[in-house]
Length: 531
Image 1 (cartoon, one colour):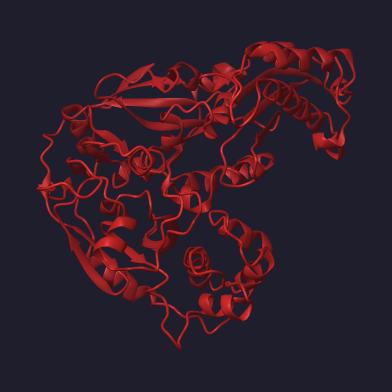
Image 2 (spheres, one colour):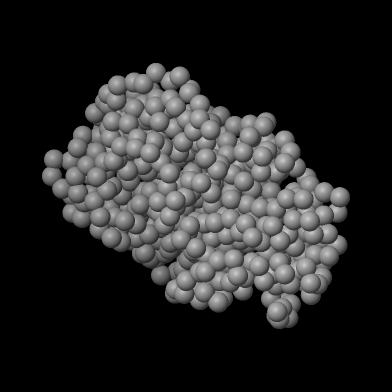
């Protein structure tokens, strides 16, 4: 399926100017930067800021967490925690950057810092600054909403990207719940918006001057920052070998861990048309998949995972735990949903879920678009159907009706901030007491996230009331079909035997839930199913 948007191709003219942002109360202009120079490197090596630490250098541990403030779609300031160790410093353009060293002073601690002291949550000093900044982002969100109540669940979620707990979980969570007590401390909204206006970017594509000499650990290259879809498409067509980045939560590790030169970077985060979520009342691919009119949300390539989940969570309440286990809050604040799909990882969290729903991707090249089911987008391990100069403009997430039960499960060695050993998502449509259509997506079972077509066929036509008995002949057949559907590998995350059995059990778990067996949804409480 293709369409012509009749966008007039623009010349890829790019203005050369410094990166402009605020570091605390200090206005910063940077030029001549290597494109992959990270926020953390700049802070520690150029700005002399030692409050930010490097632990894992891959966005896992949270020692480098900082807070970034910009304007949301409605023009209101928003503050989010991000990982400084992997995000390019040029992505700070037009924003306010704050570290733990910018929010308080000796004898005049910020309420977050004071709560950490009072509740004995402060630890060795290496990870404490990152914990403080995760809580600071939550504090700022609460302050602007005038909400002094922090629930335990909100505190746990805010700290999902901070792995170290030397002092234990309880005192840090206590500090999170104690920090939001009026009088509030923070910059007035009008003053903050005024400062953001001073560094606001215009509508033209821009780039910092290319580094004349290398920076330690970095190669040469350019950082292209388009502002419109037409500019982005023109730059992509002119420099098709450029690397598209958003929050750099994936390719950032190529720099910090593999010491690779990324060459030219094409930043998607500043393109307005790609940062929107729209509704499509009739999605042709999803309608064909489910055999009835199906709407979808079209989520642009610059929409972060956090923003996407905020829009999707109310529509898929049974997937809330799965959404929470997608990386961590700082990673979700930088990463995009489209980026998680486009990188082609066989263990990407979003792909199995979208495959189960019948999701599709919109591919764009200078005004011409085509739409592919996600299953046709993946051609092999980290190989996709993109043509030269083409990019993923958006993903379409089907919104099935109330007759479709959607569940998603992720197994990993820790609940948060970990890579899946196995991920399984199911979408089962019931009509007349029987399964009329089924979608099953799996991750970690093959070279790409895949559709379990044989298991889908085994489910279609089964009576729902038979699914409540895991020992029925029908359920044994479904279990065995899923068990035998793929040939996974042994690796350090899981054995092939574990993956087969776990995937089959997760399909069983979905079926039990569909049949009303909520009391036995925890598979660990069941005796093994012998077949």
